[in-house]
Amino acid sequence: MWNEKEKYVFDFEKLKVYEMGLDFVRAIFAVAKEFPRDYQYSVGDQLRRAALSIVNNIAEGSGKLSKKEKAQFYRIALNSARECIPMLTILSKDNIVPEADANGLRENCIHICNMLGKLISSVGI
Image (tube, rainbow, N blue to C red; front, top):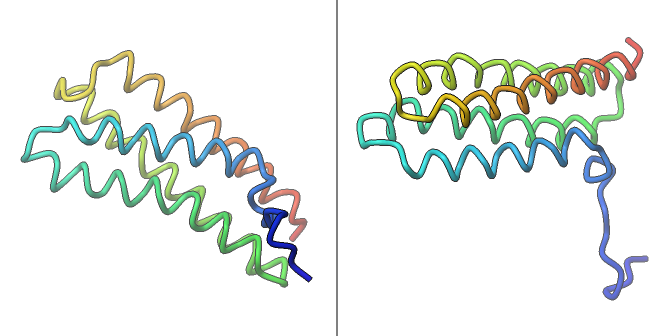
């Protein structure tokens, strides 16, 4: 029985990769606010969706009972993280995001990719 005084914690909320994904999403949303209009509705929207997809698919995958389904959602999260890399490169090369900021986001994304790879391996399919 759920006690209103105790906060319920989902399994995925205990995962470090989920926590890092949330930080990444927040950073992406913060930087995307500053995009010029022509980038706001193209690269900006796609980058925000891809970043959100990382954490959403980790959450959805954690609730699946079969290892195959669980791994599939974690793979989608991994592919969404990879999708962020070319957009960060474009934003850096077009001087929309300072190179140092883009590199920091890229490093965070790479770390998330590595953690997701390990999470997928841990499912054991």
